[in-house]
Amino acid sequence: MLAVAVLMGCQQSVPQAKYVFYFIGDGMGLAQVALAEAWLADSTDVIGFEKLSFTEFPVLGTATTFSASNIITCSSAAGTALATGTKTNNGMLGVSPDSVSLEAITYKIKKAGYRVGVTSTVTLDHATPGSFYANASSRSDYYDIAVQLPQTGFDFFGGGGFIQPEGEDKDQVSVLSLIEEAGYQVVYGIEQVDALAGAEKMLLLQDKERDFMDALPYAIDRKESDMTHADIISVAVDFLDNEKGFFLMSESGRIDWACHSNDGKTLILEILDLNDAVQVAVEFAQKHPGETLIVVTADHETGGLALGLENGYSVYFDALAEQNASKDILLQARDMELVKQVREMNFKARIGWTTSSHTGIPVPVYATGSGSELFSGRMDNTDIPKKICQAMGIPF
Ligand SMILES: [Zn+2]
Image (cartoon, rainbow, N blue to C red):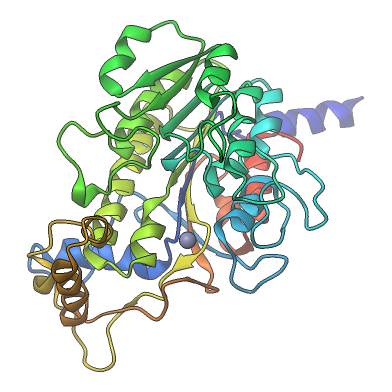
C-alpha cells in the first residue's frame, strides 16, 4: 500500500501540461528561420540573428522527417506522423501504408476531457490540418476529408475555407451546412467573433470579402482588414480557455508555398507572421506558468534554402527592399515582368534555392514550458505526438 501511495505521489508531483500549443510551420527548416532572423538583424544594421519568439525557447531538438515510402516526405505523410505517431506513404493522410485508419492525438486529448482546436493559414482540408482530424487514402480527396470535420466534435477550427466545399463536381451537400448542422457557429472574419459569445463550437473563416474558400493571403499581400495568424490564435485561445485545459494545433501553411515558389521576401514575412502567432501563445503561457507547453516545429523543409548562393560570403537583404507582392500573386495576375524581377532579387540577395520541392533534411523542434525537456536532442517526427501526450499525462 505504502509503495502504491509513494508511486502515486510521485506521479502526481510530475507537472503536467494543461494548455498545449502545437505550431507547425509547413516547410520551415532551420534555414527559413535563420533567414528571417538575419533579415531582422540586418534591418537594424547588425550582422547576425535577432531571435524570434520561439527561437528564444530554452529547448531545441531536431526531428527526422522521412516518410514510409520516401526519404523526402510530402505534407500529408509528415502531417500523419506529427498527428498520429505513425509513418505512412507520401500522398496518404491519417492512414497506415495499408490504408488502416490511424487515431490522431487530437481524439485522445478530446476523450481525456480537454477542449481541442485545429487551425491553419491555408484551407482546413489541406494535408497538415486534415491529418489532425481525418483519414483518407489520398490527400487530394478534399471533400472526403472536409466532411469528417463536423464529426470530430472538436471545439474550434479556424483558418482558410475548403477547396471543394461541395465536392469535386459541386454536386454534394455543402460541407459548411454539415458543419452548422453539427452545432458549429460559422464566423466570417474576426469582427463577427464578439457577437457569438456563448457559442459551443466555432469555425472561424476569413471575411467573405476575401475568397473565403481560399487560404489566407500571404503576409506580404495582406490588406489591413485581413485576418492574421496571430488573430486566429487570439480568438482560439479566448474560445478554448477553460479550467480543464486545451490543445491547439496551428499550422502556418504558406511558408511552404512561398518556398515552393523560391520567394525569399514572401517567406521571411510568413515566418514573422508565425513569430507573431507564437507570441500570443507565449503571452498566454506567462499568465499560466507551470501548466503551459508550447512546441514549434515543421513537417519538412521546402526549397533547399541556403543563406548564400554559388560563391561569396554575403547575403544582400537590400536587394529585396523593392518587393511588395508575392511571386504567386504576380503569377496569378500574369505579371511576368515582376515575376522575373522577384527571381532576380533572390539571385542578387544571394538567397540560394536548390529545388521547388521539399528536401529530406531534419527540421528544428523548439519547446518551452511544462514537459518541454522531452523535446531536447534528436528525435523522429513520430516521437513528437507521443511526447505531447506524455507531457499531458495522456496514455498514447
Ligand atoms: Zn509543400
